[in-house]
Length: 132
Image 1 (tube, rainbow, N blue to C red):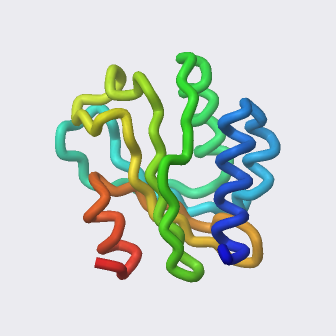
Image 2: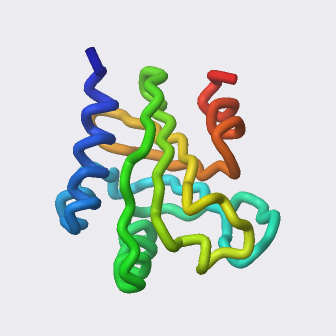
């Protein structure tokens, strides 16, 4: 039986995969803390931004490029959820190649994603989530 946090994450990603960005954003806390890796660098230092609007802008840019994402794997760790997301063609827009995949640790609180932490690979994501 999957927990409510995994259900939140899956439902949000499924909405995004269908092109329903506004529904997906309802699962994102307005004060989101997003730690991301700048795709224009080979080995970027993590950078942090705040607010759902920043994520919305990035996702709209991705959709504008014709890129769609699919949730490939979900690993449950209570309030932290590790996701592997495949976005065919995204490596064409980044210096560091990652087989068109993103590895993120999402923190969910009271039905909303309050933090997203981008990782370089699966192993790093598991470490960030406290699973490896």
